[in-house]
Image (cartoon, rainbow, N blue to C red; front, top):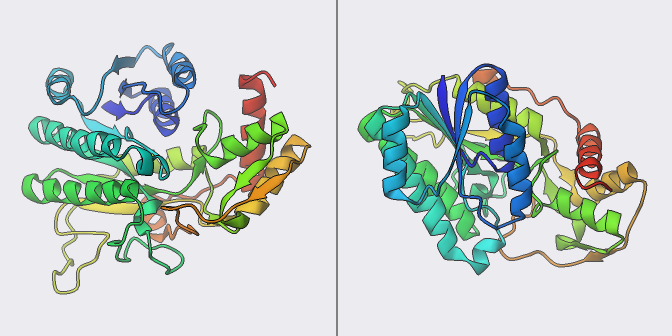
Length: 335
């Protein structure tokens, strides 16, 4: 297939692109290479993809309406994996307009491209942050998610609603994936595994929010990629049993689905830090701080629907995943 991967220089986008290329698909990657985190890491990821003959890259912004229209018209994609977004919960408190531009305007441009070119299937990144104030554990796609606690979460919920409207109106098959704390080699420097590793290796104290009592459903990147591709290959259909009298938030009469994609084994943050310290062979001082505005205290994915529909089965333990990440980090940064 010919597949558009947006955010191809990003953490998940890079790994998904490489997986698709290795199985024989043609991949067109786009990314605006913004400076939300170190651009050099994004460029290094792209250098890993350049040797593949079926990979091509365009530096462009999904918020560029005319550019996106031209891309879809010229390339004639079969399917789209949309992973480009302005990420980060805390940054949405500082720069909210970046989230409107990328996550709302940009997503609309993706939907319009899919509509105009009759794309077979759009798979897009949602987030576990949509669960917001929901306290029912584990988080289920059949739960109500109408109470986000950050603008980032609100934009991801909006993406699910926008996708549904296009699936309903135009019959475009769309699937949203609610990612749960993804980590691993080539990861994002603004996320906790990266921040903790860097601080420990440099001998700096760690800032640990919510006094380390957070529980996160840390999911290794290889497991995430397998889930994304399994979903991409399974085009959603209408749920004939769906009823507006008792609506299921995870399905629809339209060809639309949302799934959780996580490890389904949450780990307390202090325990996670201890595992990183053990893998590095070094400990450091911890500065325990209160819960940050916009943060969700715990995440825990119910992945039953994804397992049932695609055979998804996370395989990499947290201990093994951390060791692989530390090995990559030391090699990449020549520690």
